[in-house]
Image (cartoon, rainbow over all chains, first blue to last red; front, side, top):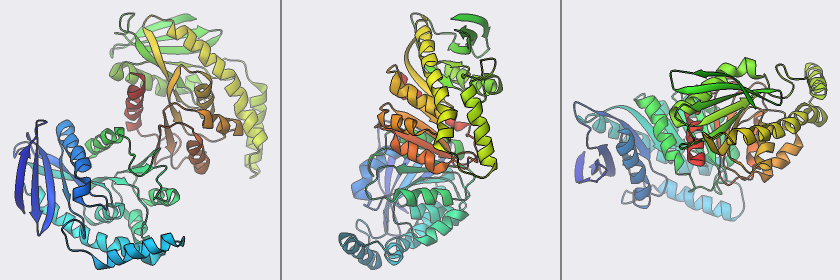
Amino acid sequence: MRFTSEQRFDDDVIEREFTLDGIPGVLWTPASASASAPVPLILIGLPPLGLQKTYARVAGRARYYAAQYGFASATIELPGMGDRPRLPEVEQARADMRRVLQAGEPLTDEIVDALILPLVDQAVPEWQATMDVLLALPEIDGPVGYEGGVISIGVRLAVTDPRIKAAGLFAGSFIPAAIVEDAREVGIPLQVLLQWDDEGNDRQASLDLFDAFGSKEKTLHANTGGHTGVPQYELDAGARFFTRHLK
Amino acid sequence: MRFTSEQRFDDDVIEREFTLDGIPGVLWTPASASASAPVPLILIGLPPLGLQKTYARVAGRARYYAAQYGFASATIELPGMGDRPRLPEVEQARADMRRVLQAGEPLTDEIVDALILPLVDQAVPEWQATMDVLLALPEIDGPVGYEGGVISIGVRLAVTDPRIKAAGLFAGSFIPAAIVEDAREVGIPLQVLLQWDDEGNDRQASLDLFDAFGSKEKTLHANTGGHTGVPQYELDAGARFFTRHLK
């Protein structure tokens, strides 16, 4: 891992950009974090828009977590997004999806799988490599939480890597059947955000996925509003969820 | 209203029992509340078990709200419960319900209406009279929140009395159609608790009721567990909800 920039904000949060095997990422830490006072880590999964379009939103969350709750947070660019090499299978699936939806036809399982599973297969080991290097920093010691965007990545990561101790997931559409199967194996505490009036999201599919999770402690926070209308107060609810489980 | 006892706990919360037109109730206030520093009020609706069986749970919540967040809280006995005169129509409906459920038949709308609506019709004006006298106390000035048990009472109160500015409701079964109609007229911020594995509760009916609420800001908190298994952390989530809307 190579840090490519460092900036300290007046909320005493340090933001460092990095690259890891060619993947760009950002790390936020409270300035007070040190080898003698290391902090837990939250991985922030990006929504499928890429880092550039979501930077402001993600950085706002990460700086809040650092300044108000003493967490380190990190994000990495999604496979196929930004300057990263395109994923031809996913691009093809995206085109198929557009065509099918415009024709008013239902999405097939094949398209959903091709849209999501290559992302999952590539992103999960990338998150694990990111954890390896971030947890080796003296100012970060875990445990690790995951929160964010492409819910299928979070689900697979949660069943794959025991370092993930809690996850805050954002309900989205297009859940491959393999991921619903994974969900049954998830045992860590979960807090799932669902936008009740999400135009692009199948509400029932989200409720079914919530139902499928094997976790003994799982909480669904459903709020009025569309896909991008998550209320501001959920930021604090998320921070308190992670505080319960990572501190 | 007549206060019948007063006790000060070592968390600096004052608990006073009272009677109002023969209805027993309890008021909890932070000891620091005064005419020059009055506090908002939360009405705590009891579940249909009566005050005696639920006192410990309700008092725990009320004292937390007072000690940690500076709210006054009050509860009153439900119509027909404890030492209050029985409601023959409700008793009959309860017997009908038992008979029908034991026979494995579905509950009819008539039974649900007879079980719930007399409670609602009597409890709502009683809550309003309680508000009248509590808001006249120098140490309480509103606004008023409602939270609690028999969700139909909360819904009707929310559409009836404009002093209620926010409500934390506990999803329950047996919602009369008239209450679902009321729900469409509710406009205040809501936080609804749903126990995902509630044996005695129809999950879909609860989701439908949540969907029906007209409020622009409404949040559903669904948690794993049965009817009485509401997680401890929802206490704080409720307090923070009321803090956003009553302070």
